[in-house]
Image (tube, rainbow, N blue to C red; front, side, top):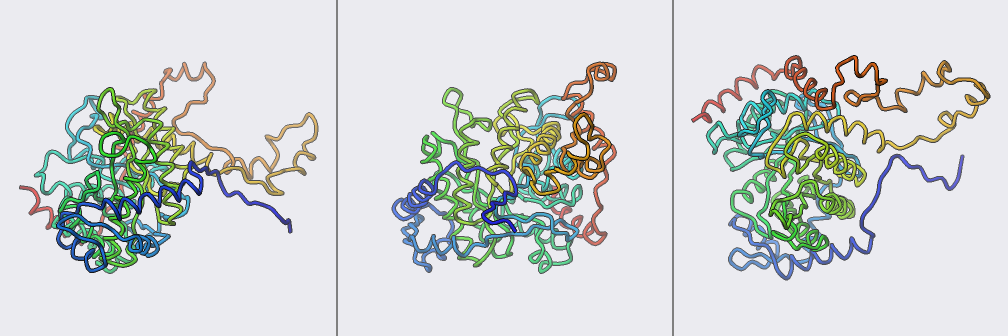
Length: 479
């Protein structure tokens, strides 16, 4: 036995001190109690009124005790399954899992390289790519499907996702009717609503309207998701200097107040329903008016927000793997790498928006594949260094001795796969071999991998009964 040993399982860091976290928490409570949140949903207003909220027309002021109750009621750990019933993600603490985003308007066509409107087949291809990649852990639809009736686009998005990946899904739902249809389809996939509640493979995603407002559709979907017992993400997407204060501390207070108000509503509707704290804590570039997805301020603020969520001991929702660049280039690689690194080290649980480009306007399959490689690199860093008698290798060093080599020693064979990250796209060839093989750049290798996955990868098919049910529902969502 060794006393006074600190066991470090991996690499982590914090942005905020405990005092700063407490100050932001208290400021959030003050905003909720003094300023309040505008909520345009009668059902939510009634729940809040009965629970002691101060309701005047559509403005609600939240008593501190009610917010604290909701924080303490929310689960500290959430398990997410795949559609085959396997437990895939353990959410809580500092484990990080990366996935796609949603609602992008445009797509970089994988064949032509041209920017165009996002189509249903793009969501299918994105899900298929994600299904094949080892470091993409879960899936969103990537974009807003434009070539189907708008009122049914959420169903179309879910249809192609569930057919093209077995991985857990975060679903965007635009109406109560849409969420009902998606839950009906998802329930058939796993054998019923009870099975879906026990082993959820979908998470409901909606957003408030910053600053400090809830529109009727999003609030109703929040309540319905809680009724079903689905894990819930109801996350602010704010711009510092536009829809929140320009100061990062003020931005965190505003975002946190929005998150906590939704948490209260969800817990009042169904006590103990899983809920995620986080969001897109971006800035508005003052020279262009654009939201910046690649700014250092966004990475810093999101990492700080993870400190706050860990303080609450509530699972977290992060943002990374995205860029302001219009193409997959050096800027895209820099911004995606840093955002993924900060998110991983800060312990964000579900991290979305891999594949986002052009400040959240355009998606790219190539970007998804490149970020998958970046994540492999980062996961090796996050794993840290294992220090024990075996890895210290004192006997091995003695056996090899001065002037020897370790290549043929059994210790190397036993440990090199676990110790060393093996890249699939990063080039480590000697120069002559690289030149002889075509002097291919990273983007060439990325494009080749995208095409190979699209041509050869076959996702696990759905059960026949589920296919029939999905087809029945989708038949009424085509016109």
